[in-house]
Image (cartoon, rainbow, N blue to C red; front, side):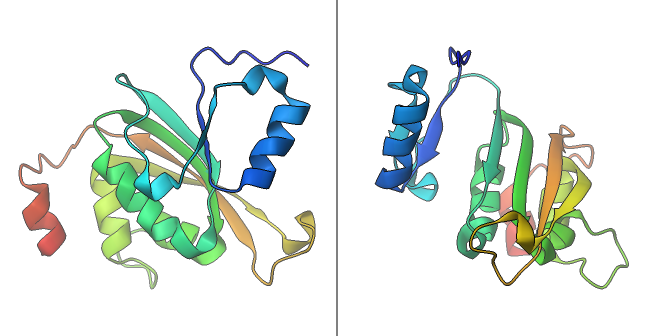
Length: 152
């Protein structure tokens, strides 16, 4: 299988997964960074999209990293634990609306795409997953001081 990988970078922490990807997709040579996403440097000097199946235990931290990179990240499509996906996508007035909803929605339009049942995985987790899309909205609220917004 030939993959167009000119502008592609995979960030993966698990060495076994990296070895598997190299074996199955040799075109990925030099396109995989053996790194922790939370410690990764900005991967491109231009606008890019992040796509991932995000580890549930650090998904909130990943979202904060996306917010740090928001000047470059135009879109995110990701699978999260369903409760986290719902919290990010929730609307004002809903039970799950909170700080994460507010911060992300200041800079991204959110679309909840679909649920992924536990039976889709081997072994199945004890939770349902949700896939969401974040699309950069270019700060329609004219927030000039994000540091103050976060501390608020």
